[in-house]
Amino acid sequence: MKIILFGATGMVGQGVLSACLADPAVQQVLSVSRTATGLTDPRLEEILLADVSQLERVEDRLTGADACFFPLGVSSAGMKEEAYRRITYTLTLDLAATLARLNPGMTFIYVSGQGTDSTEQGRSMWARVKGATENALLRLPLRAFLFRPGFIQPLDGIRSRTPLYRLVYALTAPLMPLLRWLAPNQILTTRQVGQAMLSVARHGYPTPILEIRDIRAVAGI
Image 1 (spheres, rainbow, N blue to C red):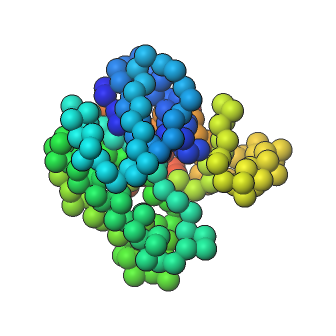
Image 2 (cartoon, rainbow, N blue to C red; image 1 turned 90 degrees about the vertical axis):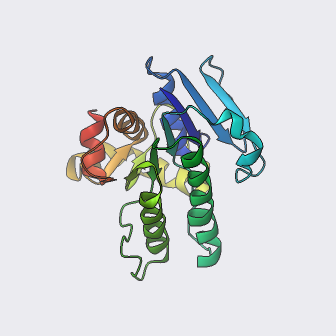
Image 3 (cartoon, rainbow, N blue to C red; image 1 turned 135 degrees about the vertical axis):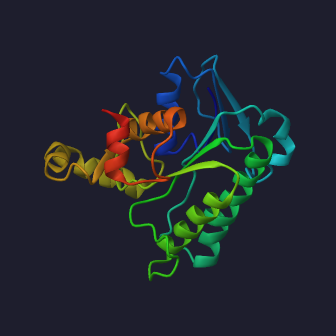
């Protein structure tokens, strides 16, 4: 498989990249990001763009892909809806439309979030925008799958780039075994998300939306 990965330096992106590079069936990972991953692997190729919306500059390198993994995103905390929508909806759809044109029918796996509002009518701003993004992706000529994780535990030395999230993970780490036992369908790991993406890219899934329970099941770990 040839995989295009956006957001490889984020917490989820790091987990996905790790899973890809550990899988011998993955022939190439093309990371598109503003910053380098810092990793060296013969199967990893990196495209660094100060503005990732400028894909037209590198379109010749984006063809022949089997799947795109898209865990790129920002927190809605402190953001106005217009600004959040510009990044979450507009940027995502522009990039996905470009990939659909270059690789018709490719698998596109988008990381959304637990509680996403498919009706686009709810009171939660982030949930409405994520719902609109999911719905628009399903209308593109892509084999789109929408992952809706909740709390994600970082493993394998992966750290969030957000200071507040790092603090939360540090505080909850000692309680994690108990929390996973009490609420197994509320918590995922970066390892599970990465493995689930690879599995869905290979085999698909009966429904386009994967909730936490689905992601755990398809990951198999």
